Length: 606
Image (tube, rainbow, N blue to C red):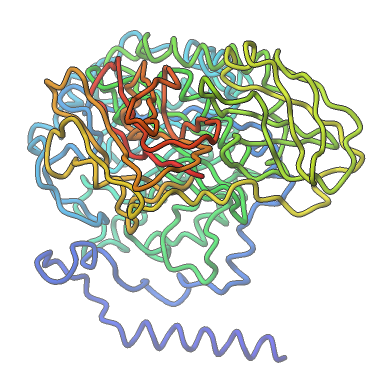
């Protein structure tokens, strides 16, 4: 009776909130924040939910298992927009219902909205796509069935703005679902609840006209294409009740048993954990999050086909995959096919190399869980059963020893062996686990992997912090650069402690970029006094992994600069181990690069 009474009081409160809030939908974008006009109350109180109802929607651990085992998925953003722009939906200069900001540039709607009339991906082959997914070592694919611009890649019965009315004229989603089922690839549909083409979306007749339109799409996608394993929503700045998310997800769980849903189901739920997993975008995700997550990242600088954009090298993609897996997530890697319907060869070639690595070493990340050692300057760890895999991603300076130190484990090590060449042995000194490597072999590996067999399953113990990650403060050095392209890209901006502190899960939005004509670019830290630096961290803008060769130099007590490290790629969060000897400064020099140099972090640690 008490439980019923509490629920009744809760619903009465919701009804009062609903009645007291204006039911009209604001249309004046000049009043308040742009996003405010798109947020409004539910049609009635049944659209709101209790915490208990929200819990009904969570996937079980058994339903999540395959997803947690997968570690790698492929994201595909595609659309007629690529005929004019490399920005899907956001490249349209029109109203953006549900967005947090208005458009300031882009293609005129009368141009953008008619691009589908010439869209003809005649070389598209769904079976070839699925073979790519398998060759790349991925277990699932997420495809944009409908993005914010409203174009549908399926035979939507209630719209003319679909693939069926292009010169191509065939249901892409049907072909993909058939191919995925045949290949044994798991399939997610990406579906944007906001629709910038529909005249009633998030406007006065939203509940009367748009919501039924959207629900018809969703029912079709999740009932007419066979087994669908998950849904990737993209709610923008909207509330869950605006999409009747509770009832919609309940229906979907009936249509597709065990279906998984990401967190973008709308804001405002009673419980903070929305969906079945979190979705950090263009960042690696947190190192010690309380639940599973999936980091979605682009292979180039854009989600859509970007023929002139920088392409990430396989080394940085692989490094990110290992860090993500070791810290409790999946990597969802996006590739944008061209207008003919094929993946860009140069992008595919890099991911092929990731797939080759997975074929040889994938057992150390797939079907594992995040390791007892939290990610740190050494790299990351994974585990399965009583096997613990140490993934050493750290590089070495010329004078650094090929040893890695970690806190002592809370259980006995039964055996240790190198999965990659170079591991020699281990010992425990002063409650510190020390791994010893052959340096000549160590430096040849992108990832030095050590397998530890433990007496007990490490899941029985708390995770262990391995790195405090407190860099030398700006007060202890002066930063200078050979040049900068704009004032907003001065070297000082990357040391703004309020908005640009490096940490997995933080999207670093400021970077140093040298002038285009600077043929001898450099970034220098001069210390106020001698420092015993043990680790250097370098990071590039996630959208521009362009450095292909660099050097690090240190300054001695006589003011002389000496090269201590020559490296190739950087990517997201490259750690370099130094000897810890006294130095008075350190200098980064990018020597070769494919596009603009954009450095988001150059930090040093004692």
